Length: 110
Length: 118
Image (tube, rainbow over all chains, first blue to last red):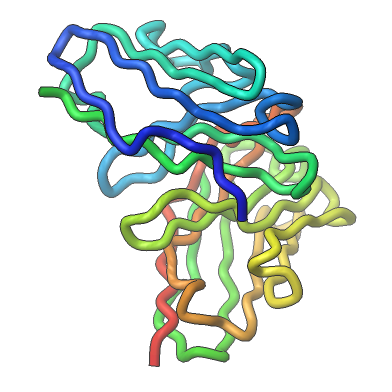
């Protein structure tokens, strides 16, 4: 099953900003909204961003999303130790007729 | 909102298992539901989805013909019947609620582990 491409890891010091890229194709990101999920160690994923850049209730504005063409980006500002987690992008793929997730990115706070 | 999976366990290759996901705290019958799995140390993989009344289902190619998703709206429960299980089906299986109108999952269960091994 096809997956969206993310960098394996990103890191930054507390208080700094990180960005995570998510690369796809015209059959998925290029034609659908992107969502982002945070998965803390040993827990279930949690929705951070939907419809490219919208935050569900309770998600702080330190988290932001954007999309351009066949790529999307998650930004985290004011990095905290509690942000150490795996982050996944996701969207519907119209060719596969299936939901596809990104390969996942581990965020490390130095 | 709460989603609680059950039914996981150790099963031999070729065996069968039925997972359940008990939903509470919301109107279950108005939401599309999904199953997503995660092999140990790996990423998330979408498995299947079902619409509100169960009349429409979709599957990942890797499970098509072996897994069946269903729901009982009277019991607020989602199911995943799995047959002909393979070692590569070993994973934590999550049920997830689709955020109405959006291609996103806004609530997830805690997951249930399925281990396929002889």
